Length: 214
Image (cartoon, rainbow, N blue to C red; front, top):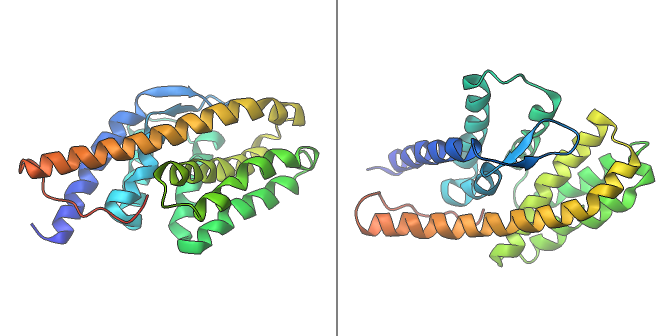
């Protein structure tokens, strides 16, 4: 099996697993009918196994296919959930640091965001710090989930104009939620990595050369 064939095989495999995970709701995003699912644990690790291009293709393909199959309306909330995927495709390496920084700026220039700048500053500086400690899996996972949170949050305030009181009330929720997400992402990475390695050792699946990070 050639390298391209292996990547296409694992692209299909990850897409199928991702689609199943997307059907298992976790909790609702406040202010909308959009729910987090187990896919939010699985999606950030795709690039760590498939590389950035195939990882993005898998995650974006799953999201779009799910909406088409279920004939889900393209609401503002559902479209915003795709923003972190688009941003990761365009920024790599140290340019990843630009994502949370731009999100902070976008948030605080909003009239409501100017009332609660601490919300953006306390959470979205975390990916910047995490970038320099990315050799640690949990820290890297924390950076990934807060990067997604930054992009979504910056878009959310402009789309829905949630009042300052709501953003203040979300602070303890976000702390708990994102720590859980980071744990879930790290655990998912470990489980998937060792499962693929085990199945490869039994010649059930071809061996996959993992990307450097997720």
